[in-house]
Amino acid sequence: MRTRLTAVAATALLALGAAACSPSSSGGDDTKDAAGKTTVTVRLWDDQVAKAYEASFAEFTKKNPDITVKLNLVPYADYFTKLPLDVSSGDIDDVFWLNSSPFGALADSGALMNIDQALPDEKSGWVQAAVEQYTRNGTMWGVPALTDGRIVLYYNKDLVSKAGVDVSNLTWKPDDPSSDTFLKAAQKLTKDDSGKTADQPGFNPKKLAQYGFNAANDLQGIYYNFIGSNGGRFQADDGTFTFAEPKSAEAIQYLVDLINKYHVAPPASDTNDNGDFSRDKFIQGKMGMFESGTYNLKNVNDGAKFDWGVAPIPAGPAGRVSVVNSVIAAGYAKTPHKDATIKVLKWLGSPEGASYVGKSGAALPAVTGAQQAYYDFWKSANVDMSQFGEAGGTKTIPAPFGPKFGDGANAYSPIFKDIFAGRTPVQSGLQKAQQAANAAIK
Image (cartoon, rainbow, N blue to C red; front, side):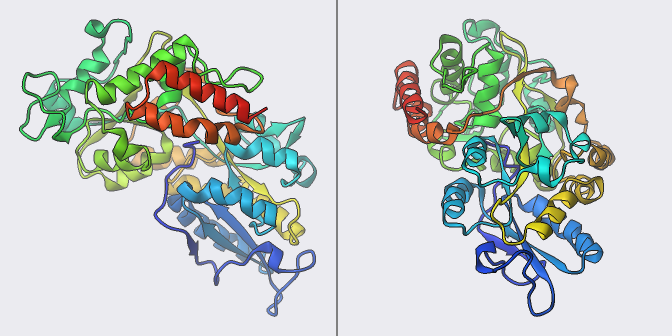
């Protein structure tokens, strides 16, 4: 799931001490080292949040001088490949981030700490949607760390102005390209190296210098929202995959056409294996519209050297429908540092502990008492946060769920890559992918 916030370049350990050790390398509950301290390791995938966590845990250690916290920063590209292997071997951190994709399987396996037992009085201070998302079989299995608002449309004000495009109320219509204002906007914002736009005669799609939009094989940023906005589904209520249904297939076809027919988005050869390609092009001033979430807000703000704004995502036949997702900090059920780990989890779920993330602007905390600091940060930067909330719409499509979603995703992902690259027809490819995914979760 793209509720990863930002991907990072390489595995790293952030200094809150020396190199992190696996919890399995220490013995006994809350075993202390020669200095009389217990070390708790925390695994995450976002470098911006990691910086905020450094400050947060420095304050935590002042209050708990017998506990040292060390951060293990793992790149998102590798995170969910390494995680199940490390959990099964016991070589996992005491606390680790989870999104919804592997959550059900890990909760059912007994690997996660029971938060209802560990922190029975804390849930009232957490975002309710996150509590519901990570409650399984009546039990809460993690501390909500971050939550996304709605997906939005970042745009380059200069490029949009020069193209004469109004991004405030774009609509896409898969069955009527002539009245599709979003497609027209994307075409006007796409240029080849001679300066011709995608709607002009002589436009050369093989030599693109500027992209209009970031259509891609991107679950959270792109295709979940288009499927929802077309009235489609990705999964049924029982967790089976339904993305080959007509409305869902129509939305995927629209996206594939943006890439391979209209050439207003980067080719899949650039984006299939690099989830940050489009973000980087936008930051470099080479893309007019970039659909993404709060997880890229700080990257855009820090990296863009031009004026940019935030608009609602384009409305489809079913309106504006966005996926909204949260991330939890899960405690390893077999940690040898249970008491210290619970203290760390409680700190992460407290307004004071989470406030460092909010006031840094790195991400929106899932602790309600820490959210105002986030909004204040971006208000001071003159960023309109309303589009991330109800101003951007109220309809949502459910985030990925089910104990074997990861198995299903592993089955459909290679086929999706071929679909977005134009190597496999959309409808037959989706049918094949859906059959493979549903077979994998049986």
